[in-house]
Amino acid sequence: MPVSACDFLAQATSTQPDVTTDVLVVFGVVGFALVLFLTERLPIDVTAILLIVVLVVLEPWTGIDPETGISGFANEATITVLAMLILSGGISRTGIVQELGRRMADFAGESTRKQVLATVAATAPVSGFLNNTPVVALLVPVVTDVANRGDTSPSKLLIPLSYASQLGGMLTLIGTSTNILASDVSARLGSEYPELHRFSMFEFTKLGAIVVVVGSLYLIFVGHYLLPERVPPRADYLEEYAVGNYLADVAVVPGSPLAGGTLRDATAALGPAIDVVQIVREGERSVAPQQGTSLAEGDVLVVRTDRDAITALEDAAGVEPLGRPAGTAELSTSDDGVLTELVVSLDSRLVGERLDPEWFREEFDAAVLGLRSRGELVRDRIVGKRLAVGDTLLVQALPETLDRLARGDDVIVAREPPRPDYRTDKAPIAVAIMVGVVAVAALELYPILVSALAGVVAMVVTGVLEPNELYDAVEWDIIFLLAGVIPLGIALERTGAAALLAFGIVEAAEVLPAIAVLWLFYLLTALLTNVISNNASVVLLIPVAAAAAAGIGANPFAFVLAVTFAASTAFLGPIGYQTNLFVYGPGGYRFSDYARIGAPLQLILSVVTVLGIAFFWGV
Image: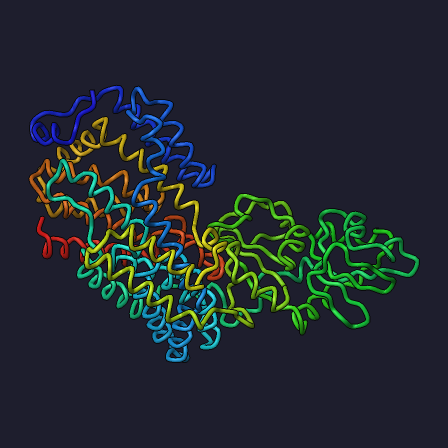
C-alpha cells in the first residue's frame, strides 16, 4: 500500500517506510527517465510523452490512471508557463530588450569589465519578469556585437549572459518556468505540510536580489578572467570555420551539358556531397541560389564540399575547377551576402534532422558554409550530420533574409540583423500589459494564471501580437516536459517513494544540523539540474526535501526554496539549462569552460542562498 507523507511524519525518526513493489516500480520509472534525459536519445518532449504512457500502463503500481496521467496538460503551472511565454514573445516583438542591450553597449565601450557589467545589468532585471530563455535568445546578437565593437572576444561575455539570466530568473515567481512549477508542487503538498503554500509574486525577491548582486559581482570582477578567448575579437568566420579547406570555384565550360539546365540538374550531376553556395555570372554574385536557377556557359559555381569531393571535381564532366583561394577571398568580400552564425533554437524544426544544405538553402534562403556541433567544429563532411539545440551553422545570406530569420523561431541569428523590424510603436502598450499582469498577481486580486491569460488576450487585441504568433511564441518542448513530469511527481508522492528517499537522507544525515542538510539538498539539486532538466529536478526533489525536513523537525518551506533556487543555477555544463546551449556555439566554448567559471559561482551561491533562507525563513 502507498505510504503517505503524513504516515512518514509519524515514523520517520523510528521506522523505515516499507519498500513496496509500488515504490520499486516508481523508482524504475524515475531511473528510466533519468537515462533518457541524460542520453538525449529522444527529444525532451517525446521523453515526456513516453513517461505519461509508462506511468498509465503501470497504473496498478504507480497509481496514475489516464485522467491523472494527462492532468499535467491542464495543470495551473503548465498553463501559466504557456501564457508567460506568449507574453515574453509579445515583449520581444517590440524590440524593447534589444534596445536596452544597445543602450548598455554604448556605456560599455572597450572595457571588458564594463562590457560584462552592461551584459549583466541588461539581462538579470529583465529575466525577473520575462522568461529567461527568450531573453538570452534576443540578447545573443546584441552582446556579440558589444564584444566586437569593443575588440573583446565574445567568449568573455556570452556565458556571463546565460548565467545572469538564470540569476535574474530568481527575482520573481514568473522569472522561470521552474519557479512556477515549484509553486504548484508546494501548493499540492500543502495539505500534508501546513508550512507549504503557493508562492506569491515576490515571495523570495529579497533573497533573489541578494543572489543577483553576489552572482553579478563575481561575474564582473572574477568570472570573465576565468574564461579563455575561444573566439578572437572580430573573428574571421571563414578562417574560424576553416571554410577555405572545403570551398572551391568550378566553371561551367563551353559545351557543358550543365549549360541551359538548372542548378538542380547540376547538383544531381555533381553528386550529393557538392553544395553550390554562390553563382558568379559576369561579375555578379547570386547568394544562396535556388534550385530552379538556370545555368549558362561561363558561370562560376562556388561550391562547399569535403576534400575527397573537391578532388573528384577534376574528373567531373562539364566543369573545370578553378581552385580554392579565389572562391574564399571573393566569398568574404561579397557586397550582398552577409556572413553570420545561426544557432539552432529550442523549438526549431531542425532539431533531430540531418543537415541537407540544399533543403536548407531552399527553405531558409541561406547557404551553409560550416557547422559547430556541441562547440566542436565539424571538419570535412557536414552533409547528413544530425542537428541538436545549440548547434551553430555558418551561413551566407542576404540582409533581408537575416531579418526574416531573426523574427522566426527556428534559429537565433548570432549577429544583429542589418535592418531589424520591430513593432516599436507597440512597446508602451506591451510594457503596460506586462505591468498589469504582475500588479494583479502581486496584489492577489486574481491568481497569476488568470492575469497572465488576460494579458495574452490584451496582447492580441491591442495588436502587439498577431493571432498566428501566439503558437510561435510558445516553447512547446517545455510545455510537454511539464505535462510529463508532473504525473511522475504525483507517483513519487502517492506510492511513498519520496518518503522512502527522505527517510534514507534523514538516516544518513542524522548527525548533521538542519542547515547542513539544507545545504546538501541545495548541492544535490544543483548537481542533478546540470545533467537533467531543471523542471524535472524540482518535481523529483521537492517532495523528498519536504518529507526530509519534516523528518528532522526542520521547516519544509525552507527546503522547498533551496531546491527551487538550486534548480535554476545550472552552472557546470552546457546541457543543464537551455540558455547555456544558446551561447555554446557563438562563444566557441568547450564543455570545461562552463565548469571553470561556474563551479566557484555554484559553491558561492550555495552558501549565500542557504544562509539567506535561514535568515529570512528559518530552518
